[in-house]
Every structure is written in C-alpha cells, then in structure tokens.
Amino acid sequence: MKLPIDGRYLSLATWRRDGREVRTPVWYVTLGGVHYCYTTRDAGKVKRIRRSSCARLAPCDWRGRLRGGWCEARARLVDDATLCAQVYTALRRKYGWQMRLLDLIATFSRRRDRRAVIALEEI
Image 1: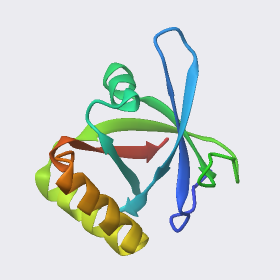
Image 2: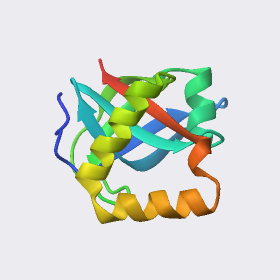
Image 3: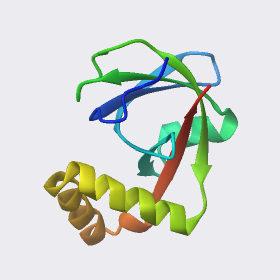
C-alpha cells in the first residue's frame, strides 16, 4: 500500500525493547519516494530506530487517529547535511507558518541544533 504524499500527518509506529508498540503522529514530506520527518535527537523514537529499523506507517490526523491502513517501513536516521537541509526546506514549504514558528522557538530555546531527520521507506 502506498501512502499519500500530500497528507499532513503520519502515524509512525516503532517498538520498545519489551515489544510494545509506540505510535507517534508526525509531520512529514515525501522526496524521491521516501518519507521524511524530524524530531529531537534524544526522542524515544530515535532511540527505538537506532535499535531497530522496523517501523509501520499510516495516515492519521494531528491526534494520531488513523485515516487509513498500515504499511511496513524501514526507518533510518539521516546524517547527510545536504539532504537534511532539503527536508527542512520541504517541510517549511508544506507547513508554512507553523513550521517557521517551530523553527523560531527551537532557535531561541537552543533546540534547533538537536534535531534529527528520519527517513521512512515503505517496504
């Protein structure tokens, strides 16, 4: 199942060590057939992705209520600075003032440098 590239939110499901699933609604953009989202480097989902690349994705609303079916995905952290810049540019274009406001808050709170970009490839 292919996810919509124009939706506003994806539910990203990752797993804890004990096998419990954790679902998180995230903003995302799709570039070259790969979905990208961002978070802080110390977020739980980053820790879970470092341990296992297995993930599931589904379209959802801002509260995480599903709007479609799940698809299996492979998640990885992006370390290419150029690609990260492209992702942030695409996120600003897609989410407009909301993303710019979060960028401003992150800059003043010194959290902007602690961001991580996650690549999500459907399998």
